[in-house]
Amino acid sequence: MNTVLTLLPDFALILLGFGLRRWMALGDHFWTGLEKLIYFVLFPALLFNAITKTPLSSAAIPLIGVGATAMLGAMLLALLARPLFALTPISFASQFQCAFRFNSYIGLAVAAKLHGAAGIAAMGLLAGGMVPLANLAAVWMLARHGEMSVWRELAKNPLLLATLAALAWNLAGLSLPAPAGQFLGRLAEAAIALGLLAVGAALRLRGTLGATGRGAAAYFLGIKLLAMPAIALAAALYSGLEGIHFDIALAFAALPTASSAYILAQRMGGDGPRVAWLISASTLLGMLTLPLWLALRA
Image (tube, rainbow, N blue to C red; front, side):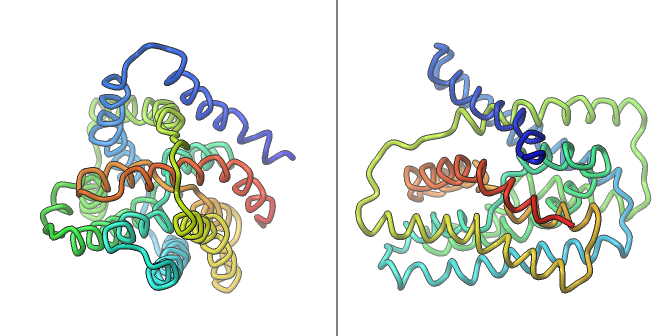
């Protein structure tokens, strides 16, 4: 119950975004522009700011290892969906990413509620470490079936570029000038609140999936909300993670699918409507499953 109450303000922001999209005549162009602002400016700034301020030490290796284990496990399970549900290549490639991509807006908000600045740093490091893996797998699958260049898509991905730049900056032992740090900090502060509003505004549950579509959707949702956190829990216990790192690993794996999965599917000619439905369903169901998984934290 305490976990639910702790996360309630963040879930309320998501629901507020859903309401604002429908009650205020801001126009689709406003929300489209906001999503682009978050995706290309605010979120890369948030990642860069968090990673450059987080000391990279051997203590982070088990955390990243657990996150990678959970994500790779989800990917392997997701590969079974195509033969199980006879999905078309492009539909499978579009939905495949929904089994493992994570909503960092929600993740950073949850981490801040659980452990404050230390939680944000840990989640930022884990998310930053997993962004290349998640984007490589998602873009590769869509590019493979959509006949587009994987490397060209990766080279234009702002999340991947921000992560790599921040890791290089951190490993080089550089420090940000105070004005630059304050500038990125302001952008990072805006990213979480606006990101949660954008998550709510992007909720789309209309449309029919069909008999085959419903089965595949349930399968992908089960992987993301149940199997992936279960794998993370087992891996965290096996590796001896505890405290903040245990909590962050479990929260990371239990996050709903990122809204950027829809953007990627649309940009690469994928099955955007079905991806949008999966993102929306995982977000709403995640409001129930995420607190339940966090109740198991050590």
